[in-house]
Length: 540
Image 1: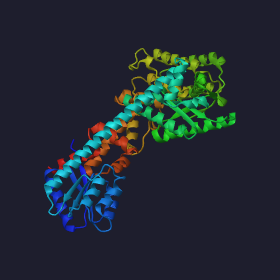
Image 2: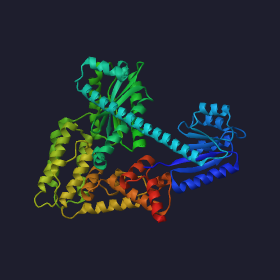
Image 3: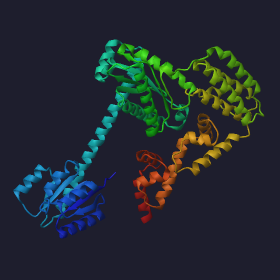
Image 4: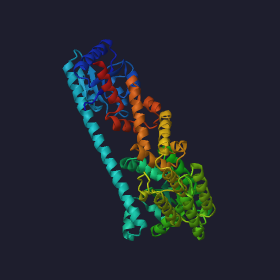
C-alpha cells in the first residue's frame, strides 16, 4: 500500500511559499502521496505549528527573522526525530552547509533559481528513509511482542510445574535469578484471581480474543501489585491466574489482612474498569522462601473454593472462610429427589422459581463443599433431561452441562431455565425471549451493552442466556452486538466523514483501538480507508 507523506513549508518570502504551494498542487495531479498540510513565515512560528501537526517532511529556508531554519531544526529534532528536513537557501555559505550537516539535514537545495527536479528527488529520498524507519519500527514492535509472549508462556509453564512439585530446587533458583524473582526470599503470600461468568466469556469471544484478554488481565494484575509491594502474576489455567505479593519487613496478621483486602479490592476494580471483566480474588497466608510456594498455593486454592457460593467480585482471605456442613448432604439429596418428582410439564416459570428458591435457601443455611455439591447438581440435570426425553423436540446434549466454571447460583439458575424449556418443549417460549433480547440490543445499540444487562432484561441466567442465544442465532451475543455496531458505523460514514472519536461515541465503543480492530475485521478496511474508498466512489 502506498503511504501518504505530510509536508510543511517554512519561509519568510511570500513568493517562495506561493511557488512551493503551486509545486505541491501540480504534484498532487501526478503523485498523491505528498500532501502539504501547513506553512509558516519564520522559525518560531514554524516550531509552534510543526509540533502541532507533526509532518513527515519539513522544507525550510535558512535565513529568516527571529530564528533561522537550522536553529529551528535543532530544536525540533529531539521532539520529532523521524521527521525529514530539506533546507532551501539563496546563499552557498560553507558555514551554513557545515551547520546543516551537523543538524543531519537530508538535503541542501539552492532556491534561486529553484530547481523543481531537485526538490522532487529530495522528497523521494525522504519518503524512502521514512519507509525504512517505519519498517524497522514494525519489525522491532513485532520482536518486542514475540519476546513478551515467550516470556509469559515460559512463566506460565514454570509456575504450573512449580505448584505441581515438578521442578527441582536448583532449577527454581536459576529461573528466579533470570526472571528477577528474588522477592520470594522475603515475606510473600500467594493469591488466585478467578474470572466470573467464564462460560459466557468462552461463548462470546473467539479463541484469539480470549488469549488477548487473558494477556491483558495478567498485565493489569502485575501493574496493580506494584502499588502494594513487589510481585508477579501469570495465567494458571482456564479461568484462573496466580499471583504473589511480597514485602520486606515483618507484618502483623492484621496488617497482612488489610494489605490483602486492599490489593484484592483494587484488582477487582481495575479489571472491571479497564477490561470490563468481573473477577474474584483469594489469598493464602504469609510464607517465606521458594520451598514454601506449593503450600502457599494450596492455601490460596482452598480459600478460592469459597467462590462457589459467592456472587461476583469478592475478595477472600483465610480469616473469612465458610464453615461447610457436608453432614447435610443426604438431606439436600432428598430435596433434589423431591424436586425431580415434582417437576411436571404444566409447571409455570413462577412455580419453578419458587422451588429453586427453596433449594437455594437450604444451601444458604447449610453450605456443602463444591466437590460434593457440583456432582449432585450434574446428576439432577441429567435426571431432568431423561425424564422429559420421550417425545421431546429438543436436541440439547445433556452431557454438555457447562458446570465446570459456574458458581452454585449460576448452576441452579441454568438448571431452572433448562428445565423450563424442557417442560414447555415445542412451545418455543425462549425464542420470544431471544426476540426481546434483539429488541433490547437494537434500542440500546449506542450504549455500552453487557451480557449481564441483556440477560437481566429477559429474566434468564447469564450463562444460560449466552448458551441459548448462540444456539438460536448461530452467533455469540458480543459478536452479534459488535457486528451491529459496525453496521451502524458504516451507515454513519455513508452520511458524512466522522472522526474516529465521533464514530466511537456514536456507536458506544469506548476504546478507539478496539473499534478500529473490529471495523477492519468486519469490512477489511480501517475507517479512514473505507471513507477514502467511498469518496472515490461518490466522485465517479
